[in-house]
Length: 276
Ligand code: SAM
Image (cartoon, rainbow, N blue to C red; front, side, top):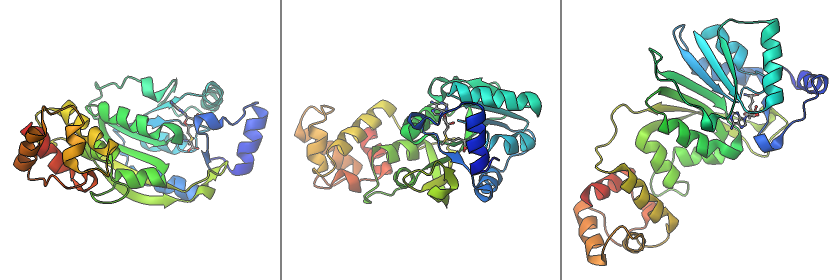
C-alpha cells in the first residue's frame, strides 16, 4: 500500500489529478488495510470483486488471498496506472476492468458466489448498494466503507432518526452489521467526515412477501411524509381506493392508524403489503 508521500509522487509521475467528482480518497492507513482484508475471511477458492481499486490500496492483499480478483475502476488514468503496475508484478489472478460498477454485469457462473469489497466513492454509495442487492443472486457478502451517517441509516432500527426507506430496502434483502469506524485521517486527501466499515450478508430466505414492488412503493410513500400519521401518508399514496380501505388494511396488519411511519418496523410494512 502506498503512503501519503508515495501517492503524491505516483500521481505526479503519472500525471494524474485527483478527481473529487469520482469520490477519490485513497486509503493510507496500513492497520485499516489489514483490518479490512482480514474481515473478508477470504479463502483460496473465493472470487472477489473490488469496487474502485484506485491506486490499489486493497488490491495487492486481495490477490494474495483469493483465487481471483476482479477490480472495476471508472477513472481511465487510475486503470492505466494499475495496468502498468500489474505488468511489472503480475499476480496472475487479477482481472482489471475499466468500467462503471453501476453498469457492470455480474457473472453468476462462478461455482461460489462473489464477495464484494470497496471503499466506496461516497457520491454514489446508495446506488451502488442498491445495484449490488439487485444482483444478489450472484453475491454472497458485501464489505463496504461508507460515510458514517450513511452507515447509521443502513443499520438503523424503527423509531430512530436514521430509520428510513433505504434502511427498509437494505434490511429486507440483507443483514448489515457495523464492523469498525475509520477515521477521516486514514485517507488522502482527507474527507470531511469519518467512515464506517460494514459487512452485509445477503439473506437466502427473506420474509414472506406477496408483492415486492408494492412494498417499496408503500415504504417510499410513507417516508416521503414521515411526520404525518400513517393513515394519511398511505391515503395520499394512491395505492388505496379510500380511507376506509387503508383503515381496514392497517387493522389486519396490526398497525394503529395514528402511528408515524418512522415507528413502523420492516416486518409491519411487509404485513401491511401482504394484506393489500
Ligand atoms: N480503493 C481505493 C482506496 O481505498 O484507496 C480507492 C477508494 S476511492 C474512495 C473510490 C474509487 O472508486 C476511486 O478510485 C474512484 O475513481 C472509483 N470510482 C468512482 N466511481 C466509480 C464507479 N462508478 N465505478 C467504479 N469505480 C468508481
